[in-house]
Length: 286
Image 1: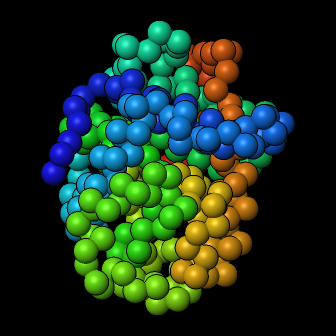
Image 2: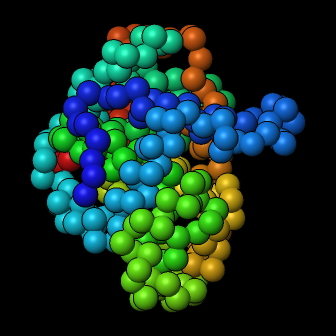
């Protein structure tokens, strides 16, 4: 398989994150974007990211990563320690910001906190991108970030740059090309194989500590084909449809809280250590 460079956070990964703001503008700014050709304006590095993601994210690849990381036996550390560990991901090539990874997490969680949401919601905001530590363990960026989607199922045309799936080996497997792939209608999203990335990983790390609403936020916050484009409805069950509103509520903060106001991790650490102690043991498995 073709891979990209590993190690420190690359500019391309940050550009994917920024690209989401262009693809899903706020309601206030949507009017000016309504008729533009989004795909024609995407930066070449972002287009190449999607090409690699769509070629390499196969059912067998994702299953292999679940086996590799699902045992949560790579590291033991507390949640705040994991946030500091994530700070080792540095994008030295980005001239627009010198904000650290922990500051990006705290911008999200502090916005959630300011709006008076429950403490579990604030904790979810603080940890939602911790799965990006996969980069520190050598995973290529296309296997860490990116829009997520269902595998073992026909690739939806609602997935951005879906034309790149023509070169994905799963496109030639007949068992994946039935209307519902290898799944039964209404099987529920808990029973499908999602693409591998930071969402799936942090969900598996945190799922036994947080309520089901938080689990959906963690696992599906990048599942834009479902919660923004309306795909995969035939696979969902009643719980999925009920939980979508929580994913959408979370995404308001995930997409639109990057500001020039930088939180102070040192000042906020006591609050978050107390918050994490409410939901997590002092040390957890990663």
